[in-house]
Length: 139
Image (cartoon, rainbow, N blue to C red; front, side, top):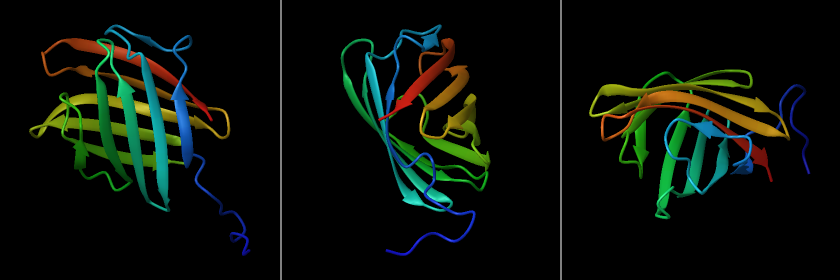
């Protein structure tokens, strides 16, 4: 088995993360559960997300993390249809759009092997503002 070059390794996002409901807060109703499953390598990651929303509906979302600051399609959400990402180390800056209009901004912070905290604010598909801090635990 080849070892990664010095200073390189597996991205700390790769793998499975689950929402910690006790540590998460939101002005909107919180989902009952969210599981993130990150795959890929380098500057091209895919985040497959399984959600059970506050009403008990199952949703599947797909986020393509390409850290070029350009919008890329996001599927499965009624609130947005594309996302831009930029990343410096373990901090990810996020802007989400619905039909070309900015509807959410946020930042994700990775503590490798422990937590991924996503702080976001925006306007949902029903024009209701929200602010959330969602904490995910590494599985």
